[in-house]
Amino acid sequence: MTTQEIANKWAEYCRTGLWDKAQEELYGDQCISLEMEGFPGGPQRVQGLDAIRAKGQQWNEMVEEFYGVEIEGPIVAGNHFSATMKMDIQMKGQPRRKDEEIAVFRVENGKIVSEQFFYPLG
Image (cartoon, rainbow, N blue to C red; front, side, top):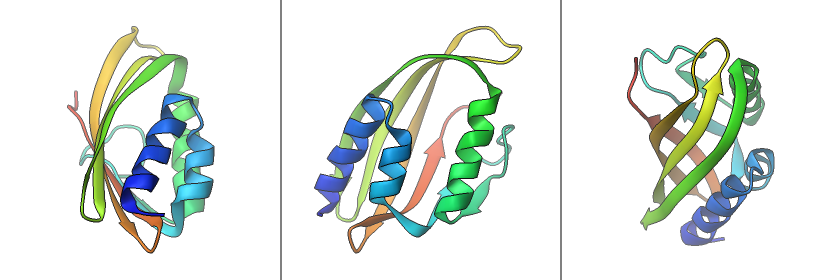
């Protein structure tokens, strides 16, 4: 698959809540996932599909209620793509809020090999 095809599939899966399917189908086994420095919900950097799944499970355990997500994009440039993610969410012990972030991905040999997320902290 081309970077554009991977980006389109990623966006489609995320819009429909198929996060696990996106990882299984589109991510490389040694993919790197990077969060913002100071990320309060877990490690800033993990490597490998199993570690990314574990990070996602840890995040899911912090969620009280997930009301939906909007994905804008993707925008492709060479072997990278980005998209904005707007989540309507309530974390445990916190009021409902809308979080926004930009996600940037790198693709090599038909697989996502890195993802990085940018968002306000605090």
